[in-house]
Length: 319
Ligand SMILES: Nc1nc2c(c(=O)[nH]1)N[C@H]1C(S)=C(S)[C@@H](COP(=O)(O)O)O[C@H]1N2
Ligand SMILES: [Mo]
Image (cartoon, rainbow, N blue to C red; front, top):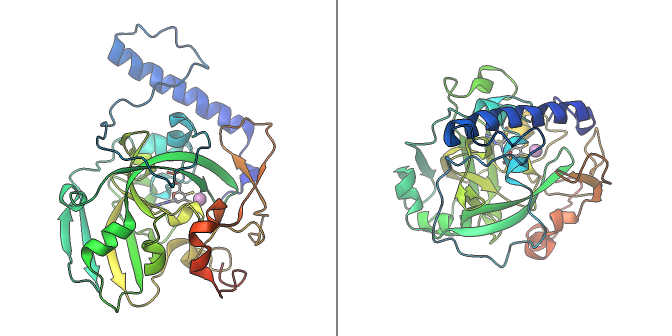
């Protein structure tokens, strides 16, 4: 985000990304179907990555938007995941061999239940839900993503935080062997994020483990990542290995990197500009290169569920 502004994303770059995808999926489709998909010439729809496992027992949610979701292609090829590079198509290309299993999550801090859990054991107590949410990146682009996830409020309650726990801190895996981007100093690794306990237990907050009914692809934060749809996308920390209940506000990656540009709260707010660009409007990915930008909504349109969390807080100072 420090590195490139939305205006720097040129149409030529998007074209070359599309060509790349068609080439890769052409090769993959050939391997699966013995080359019988030759008719899928340039410009054809990309074949979704069939290696993702289908998830079952997914409940619908009243919190889902009825806006049209972005395509699987948009959601899995236009990403921010600096551990795999800073370009939008880098995570798609560089995370292919990343191993999201076996995986364990360490739960620590002010809670009755703590310890290191295998991913499968971590997941067991919780129900899978579909949550179709808008996602607004601080770089002024947005998508609609049909996540599959578990309620973060359920997760927090399960571990029984004590009265000392005021925040929940998260950390991403930091593995230079698997993540080519962490060999570079683009951020101070590991990627870190955090929420207040009230934010973490808001019904909108989820830990996502899937997209479009299948397990979440590596580039989107496999095997588990945070989603808080009223906040800028950078709060949605990917590939989580650590959850820590803390009494003081945890340090968070983009706030550490540029505190005058990225705050702790990072609530979507069209009236507070980024120092280098306006946040009043956003480009919906997939709407076409010449589509008008759309208006950005306060709390990304989720105010009825979250505005009460910030009563009495000056949202211009506490950005
Ligand atoms: N570990 C980690 N998590 C991350 C990031 C990152 O670079 N590293 N980028 C963030 C940003 S800026 C955004 S907009 C979202 C993008 O999520 P998506 O690629 O699944 O759309 O992931 C967030 N989570
Ligand atoms: Mo972002």
